[in-house]
Length: 312
Image 1 (tube, rainbow, N blue to C red):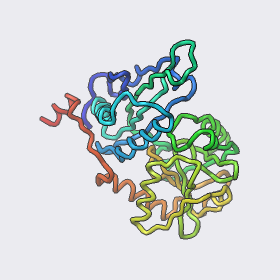
Image 2 (cartoon, one colour):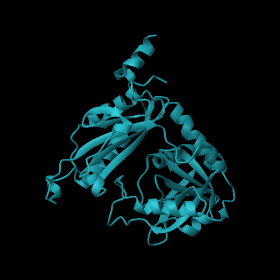
Image 3 (cartoon, rainbow, N blue to C red):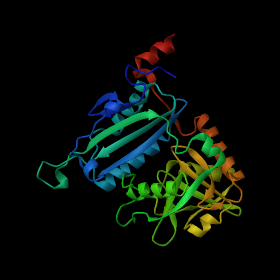
Image 4 (cartoon, rainbow, N blue to C red):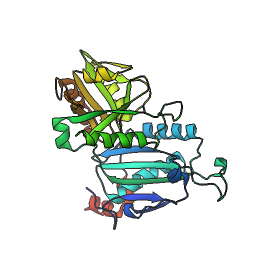
């Protein structure tokens, strides 16, 4: 791993055009991103020095900005460069990068949202797992929350936003029930997504995954591509709570973990545990990423320590 620049061993942050140690990153108290959760983000991972689906992430970021009627103060090329510089300064080979746009704030005393100047921030930390590898090996325990997901008519789930109180309280409920994480459903009793992940269930010889009420996750998109390549039948459809509990296999997909098996839903053991299709897709996902699939090499040239290491 390239060495970090001084002070950046724990991570980096992009604040008003400067790269600072992640522990020193701050956000103005009056920014509506903080006061009103008026913000959007993208979480991008790098593995072995390769960013994954960066253009797809930037496309989705731009989609979120358009839906929220925000204007980026940086160009797409400048945001891309910032991502590379954050990783290079930290010297990470495996990284977790979040790019963020907040509403900013209007002049004090005004509530006219049109007067806000939108703000770009970002941070980079070592790669984050939703569940530690040991938990993934035995399979996660999942709680079906009684809480409902914020309806799409109120907050569009296709915007990668921070409206997470339903998720946060569902996680509290999950821990109370001895589970690692939770999934929430809509008002019709169909599961949607969980805190930072999409969900797939196997029913017989096909996979099912929710088709609405959730973010179109990048790892979900990758699994759909792998299914087409490997000849695995998959359908985007409504998935009921009963279908989840009766599934032959269940797995979660997330940038923070890839393909992760579930072996228990509340008090019900999934009959095949970490099943064969889950294992096949999990292996294929990491193998493809290791081979550079949808990859873009991190430009470490802005890190003088990395340049010295390469020269030696």
